[in-house]
Length: 382
Ligand code: GDD
Ligand code: MN
Image (cartoon, rainbow, N blue to C red; front, side, top):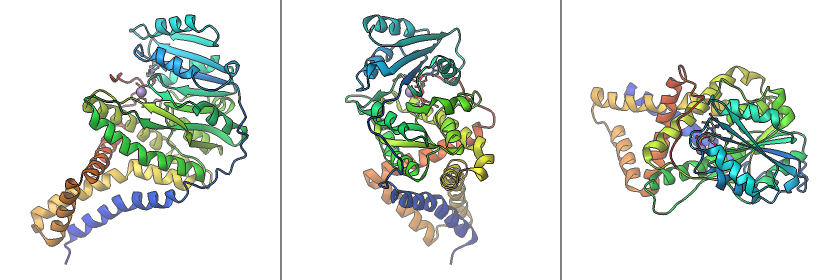
């Protein structure tokens, strides 16, 4: 017989692991569905490509060279670098690069002080002349066809926003191998879910490393919000709530180098989680009016980001409590053996670690979100 505590622990655990698993299995069935869009693959709209920078001296030249390697007609790209008072000469390096590549249309904007990425993006937006605005981080590198594949999707007028999918860059001989392993596991599942959600209607989670917006829609929203850190996911969710598609596509791939140490990797994850939590908290009251096909996706994601982490913590705490109250019963032994069993298998151990770490980071971020917005964040060494 199960005790009351054991029953509660089981129920919470089943919901915590069962719901995401069920969602994952269900959503995977949508992965290979057609887009349900009318796409002209040869469509090449004029694009304004914004690169926001704060102390990106290590990356800016490589980033600009990476952009011009894209197979997109030169005369249809405008590059806008917007720098917020970097102290490492980022803008000088960008200027020097520009002097060597005069055939590109490039604008260099500087802010006198740093007030966050969103504000910098809004400044760039006022200078953007293209129909499509692309935002791409200085420390993110694109696979060669990413730009043209994503831009062509805007030939369908229902597409409002597009994001790329991220692969954690694997570098040899580095001391952050674990961060690369955990990030790869996370990204693998994350990317599948993003694409599948996009096939249904839209995904609320965008990757600021590479995102495209139809400029008119962005202007209708008043640009990037200045009170939410997630310039990516929050903006995309607003686009989807307005009825346009906000989609993640597998053709647009971005490579991202990982932070130097496990510690800085964790603090990067914590900030990104905080920004996602802010997004879901802020759009919660608009959920009832979401487009019908987007609504379930948004509801599940809001649940997974705001509530589900607490179920794991509650279930784990009750497990310990029940150990004290009822002693080591059969059920607890089974659970303990299952956990130890998973720890012994490398792949299972890595997955468990990634899962639990993400849940703890989310729970911590939910608490933090009541007092911190983190619109300007600490630069993480790569
Ligand atoms: N101009 C300007 N001003 N650019 C900034 C500022 C700022 O105050 N802060 C950061 N940036 C630039 C960085 O130089 C980089 O190009 C990009 O914005 C992203 O910042 P990172 O420091 O690299 O953060 P990240 O890789 O974790 O960013 C991810 O999460 C953010 C939200 O937490 C990406 O998805 C971002 O796009 C997203 O905004
Ligand atoms: Mn980055």
